[in-house]
Image (cartoon, rainbow, N blue to C red; front, side, top):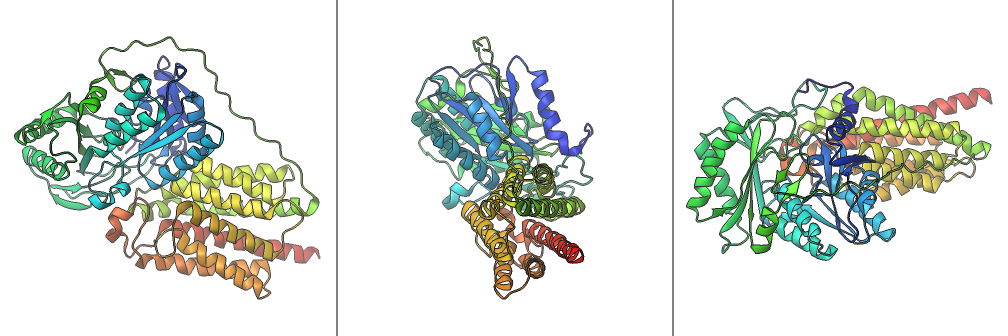
Length: 577
């Protein structure tokens, strides 16, 4: 559990502020994360890393000479939003371009990819390397679906070294990809971790047991086995990674023994002794091993082993000097920091709409206020649902997004914005503040609906149904999910279909919406019988049987709350007329 905190919702932001205050000579705060205090040298590729908070020293602690130029920092266990990634990248970009590299999680991929599209559209060259080192998260035939854990450090080191050498963007990306291809990790946990402000850990491990194949976001292990003596554990970890050696001829390896939060240095050294013996017995020579905390998960008791099979170039990168707040190796000449100013972009002024559209905008704002209220009410339950097979952050992620959307919508409605502007403003705020997969999808869906509604007059029921269909299409196109894969799409698709059907049959909007929300609720409940095919729950699909998808549940409850607002609005309008 966390002992030192104020409001749990502000934990990540306050932690980041304190981190920067403690390391002002090395890093500066930028919108969405942190960057080196010194400006990126002209002509040098900027390496931008990132992910959710809660993993220090990943990611902010690895910003500095020899590794990353900047880190985009999401909320606790949630990916940074596309807006955050874009802002961080532009704060350090040069004409040489930007390499985005991060652990392969669905939310990170959605948001970093969206930021990459925007950077390229602005003329900034950009490439991406996703880290996929965790051998337990997918089979060898699906390596592209594996998640990134402590192998991040190995890939980031190589990317940072290549950039410091003055390599071009293509070559920096190619070297980082080669490092990823030759890196494997495995982790075990002896206890779960607890999110700031939560009363219970995301998962528990029985006494005398260990969870094999856990994730750094509190995802439970793939298997639970008896806890062996240290040397036996070391041999088990080594044997699993050697099964996947990417280069049988390679004899030199980089090794990272990573503590996840509660396992102390002395224990890690005991484990490393057994690991070193096992690797050397297999004929491998260890090059400058790292033993410590590199990718943590709050107070989780656990360890991971990472091995990168080296070639001459990768070894040169691995042995190179670096100097960051949390990782220092060799001698680095630190240039005096140039004065860098990162001003937030001013909000675009809101143009008042006509009376009918402004009235519709106020109804939309009321609907989003109702969504916020229901998410605030059910935040703990949504987190519990998510923790069964995921990382337990769906409730707090939805809460951050709904609160931001509510505030943005209220501000826009107060300025007499039309329905379209209220929705697009709300969608952008949701995506920016929530981060993660759900944040990106809700943001994209709200924006698509708002763009179709526009600000001309009061939208009729058919136009609203078309806007919902546009949101559905945007979410599916962006998230690549289909019905039956146990995601929010399983509730959204039947909701949109029933709404269109009822409106087409002549039902008024409030009645049609209420009926569609009931269909979404039934569909969400039915996801209990599905196996997840997307996101962090996929490696634990069997554990989710019998439990509905939290994304589908939260969407159904949000739609139900909006139905109440529409019904009350109609009743009020009827009284006035």
